[in-house]
Length: 268
Ligand SMILES: NC(=O)C1=CN([C@@H]2O[C@H](COP(=O)(O)OP(=O)(O)OC[C@H]3O[C@@H](n4cnc5c(N)ncnc54)[C@H](O)[C@@H]3O)[C@@H](O)[C@H]2O)C=CC1
Ligand SMILES: O=C(O)[C@@H]1CCC=N1
Image (cartoon, rainbow, N blue to C red; front, side):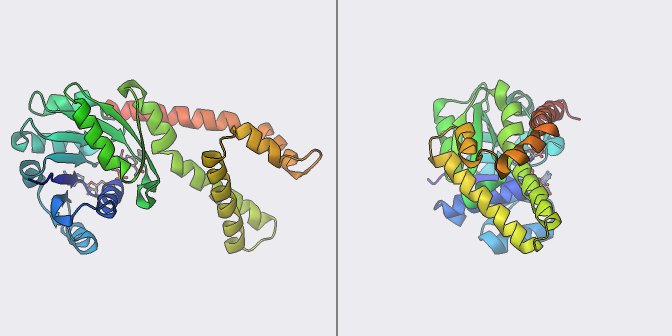
């Protein structure tokens, strides 16, 4: 019997995962999706060729349920699923803040739950997915989650106590880089460059820097020092970044994201 995987709540991250599982070679017939609105269900069928069913149907039919609704919608979804979800289902939650304990407490006792924090580069198979097991998750369940999320990028196991921090770093992380690109493109406009050219210059600088960060084996400080010529342009820019407290701003920003993840766990 083939192993069926259902994505429940197929929004931005759910659809990214669905597409990734298809690219990784899973047959559309081995996947299910659920959606709240009819037009969304139709769009998912048309784009991915998967069956879109009710949450109850997904819980009855699939062996693995990936829950990708907003944290604020999780309690309602779990209440809907509980009567239809046998305890042998592997339940994977991708929601920020939501603990495995929260999910376990609303499902049949003994249900294995894995918490995963992916990110949107799953769309291009460059995701970072941080994985933690709940009370009843075995090595086999964790390996299965790694196999699913490994199809769209890298995976890393961390203790669940570090998931809120991981959410601040890698879950939200891509947004910080988009924000920086946006801001630096504005700087290009100020310096008189056309917007499209400024965008291309900054994006390629970001891609080049990212590949070097990943592949060179060098520390970021070493890489930055290699760009920073004595008496040159880069150090003039770095002085302004330090003067404006950009390092402190980033530390405070990620701390705020971590705190928000904790608040979401509390249901606010
Ligand atoms: N967007 C991101 O970069 C990341 C998001 N996440 C997590 O993924 C979850 C979803 O986030 P997004 O995809 O950004 O939000 P989204 O709003 O795009 O997707 C949520 C989807 O769930 C659907 N939904 C809500 N209740 C439902 C129900 N009872 N049955 C079926 N469908 C239902 C909504 O209609 C929507 O399409 C959140 O918990 C978030 O914390 C995790 C990592 C990264
Ligand atoms: O902003 C959010 O809450 C979600 C979780 C991580 C990335 N996006």
